[in-house]
Length: 210
Image 1 (cartoon, helix red, strand yellow):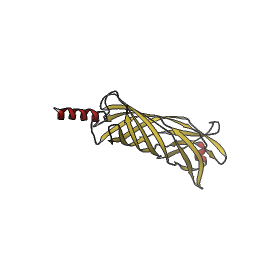
Image 2 (cartoon, helix red, strand yellow):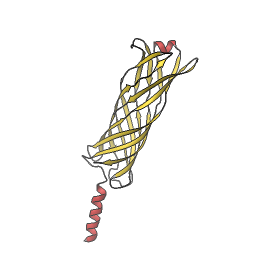
Image 3 (cartoon, rainbow, N blue to C red):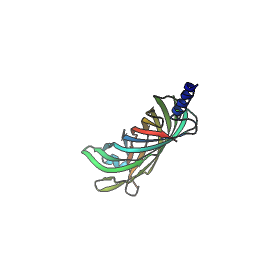
Image 4 (cartoon, rainbow, N blue to C red):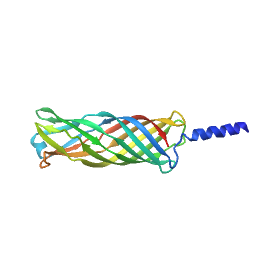
């Protein structure tokens, strides 16, 4: 009888580590935002013979929250911001355009394959991001450049939680986020071109549930 009671108690303690319907999961990650940049010329870009534009990567903190709709289905809000140096490639060489920041709050719906596992809890997700471009410092040959501040695009996600105690777990997460912005001359009168950043976001962190 005592053994049965002990087994039941251990089961209850272990179960408290698992996410279930109605739970909120919080994760803190360190992420690397690695853009896969592409560029299409507008009027100014064509006149300057721009052949492409690159955006640098950035490593930053990220916070996210998942609400479990059922034991297997959750919805996650991802919060983080990154800053990128932009380099233009021209026929006469590369030109540093400056930096711009991106804030892409992303909402995904996830499917958790093994929410009761004590070892490995994988998930996949898909959703949408709204990106806010801000703190724009882009210039070309002394001329300020404007960027379209708002962008919407899809997002895909795959990851896994690895329990390390009844309260905490290690998280590994990979996201692909599609984002773009239109670049114009000061005042927004003439198009320079369109920049797609489309980063791969790789994160490692720790999480818990409430």
